[in-house]
Image (tube, rainbow, N blue to C red; front, side):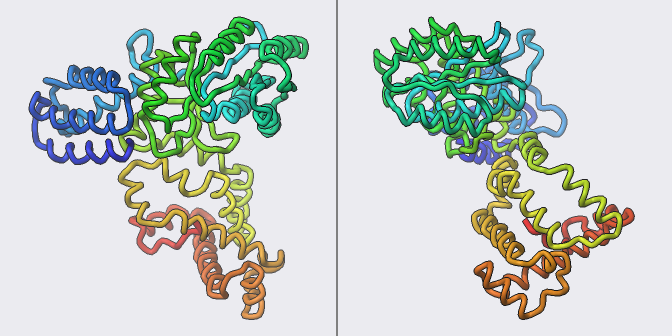
Length: 463
């Protein structure tokens, strides 16, 4: 949906250039394209109709301000309505960042009930949420599985809970889910846990037994949050599932999983509108920390091809080892040489940020298109190859690269499983980086940046 909608809007922005007002005529074509993109993304038809009507109502007759074209103005309206559809408008109507966090205002333990179909990623998401609560909200978290129909689900929760740094409450397939829930709640109270996360059973399809069981768990636990976990790739099926769970439970929020897949909006638009519950989190990768608080405005930007620069900055900041960066800066400033250990550290920092493809995903569409000319898989393999070459060197060789002559190059190449030419290429790139670092010494950084303006003559970076 993201690329389809952003491509169509970009084309129409150009076509509408030079017109002074958004009119019935010039808005019709654009809204037709928006409607088709939404339907192709499996957004429910009633949701599409309502969305298009709201955009049209707010757009017609609007004067185009400043340097904006009618197309650009309309993209702005579409963006705001996308955010409003997926998020929570401010209660005073004064505008909002459209972000909904968890409500943990309860006598501990605050119970969070996880609901959804099998395969939506409930168990993994439970552990991801535990990690989020531990790291971001500083909570003591206990998890428990009520999925007695799949013994593997109980073991899976035990494994991922350990990875998240939370505590797991044991349960077995021969127990009743209601008994498990009571025992876990009692234990959480006695051990002073802040939050109890309850992973429930799922089915491949909605059935009466499943709904009756989860209703009973809800009445026993009286959770402060009942979160509906749904696969963002499901499209239209997500709407039907959401409707059934909404009728069975008083849902307080939604977690969209697999948002890093191809579908980036269809489920988000539909499920929010069908359930009336805000989207609180989005699963962005399979890693245990691949969960982010859902920001509707930022997500609308992704859908429209505007990218998510805020998320990019957050990801880079989280991945950067500030202590290591400061140590390197001090080393360069003091006049000590930039060696291959430092070069390796830069490569490894890039990996810790999630790799090139995850960073690229958050760039605006135009920048992605330019960078897309580079094969991301090839670039990431190149990073791994460089890492392997440096790790095949001795500590002395890393500190003193000038020692690396023909015989050493052959040994390093054999150890890394590459040709000698690859070792030469890495050493040439290192020389360029080393030259650049020397220019940074004593305040030469600004002069160097001015000379590199426009990217001409810029040394090749390791990533």
